[in-house]
Length: 261
Image 1 (cartoon, rainbow, N blue to C red):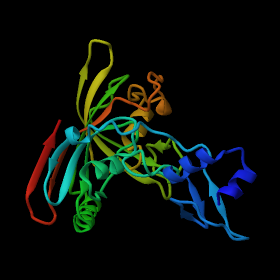
Image 2 (image 1 turned 90 degrees about the vertical axis):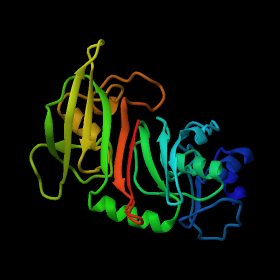
Image 3 (image 1 turned 180 degrees about the vertical axis):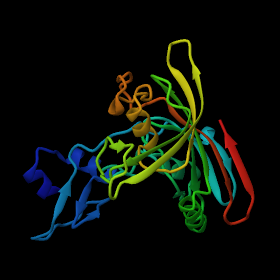
Image 4 (image 1 turned 30 degrees about the horizontal axis):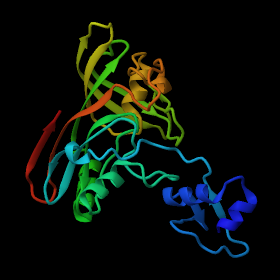
C-alpha cells in the first residue's frame, strides 16, 4: 500500500505512517491501521490533510465528574470532537477516555467540537442502547449556558431546520416540507459588564448545531461562533456555549441523576 501512495502523491513514508496511525487511509471502504498489499482494481482513499485536534493532555481523570458501573459523566473541553472523525480516530474525547480508563466506552450523545461541558459515555453496550432509546423519547433534560451578543427572546423558540449534512445549518420560522422542528427555551438572560448577555437554555430537541443556528437566526449569536454571525475571537475551535446541567433516570436501574457545573 505504501508504495502505491508514494508513487501517486507527494507524501513520504513517515507521513504515510502518521496517516495510518490517525486512521486517515481506507482500502475498499475499510479504514486501515497498518500497511497492506494492494491488489489491482482495489480502491484506495487517502486523506492527505486530516483535521487535527488538541493532543491528550493527560488530565481526563480530573474531568470525570461521575462514574459508576453503567456510565461516565465527563466535562468536555472546547476544541475536541466527542468521537472519531472520518480522518482521525486518535484525537477525540472517547479515545482519550479509553486510554485513561484502559477500557472501551460507548458514545450516547454528542456535543459540537467548539462546545464544552457535560457529556455521557456508557460503560456497556446495554446502557448505550437503553440510553439512546431514552434520548429518542426526550427523557433527558439538558441545560446549556451561553454568552451571546444580544439578548434573545425569553421563553420558547421554535424554528425549522433544513435537512442538509452541510454546516452552517439553515433554520427558519416557517415550516417547510421535510424540515425538522427545533425547540429550545430561554430560561434567563443576564446583561454582563462587557455588554454581552449570559443566557440559560433548556434544549427540548437535539438537532445538530441547533442552539447555535437558532440564536444566530435571532441575531444573538454565541460569542466566538463566526459560523453563525459572531466575530471570530480565538484561533482554537471555541465558542461560549457550555452544557452545564444534565438530569435523567438510569434506564437500567431507575435511579435518578442530576449533574451540574
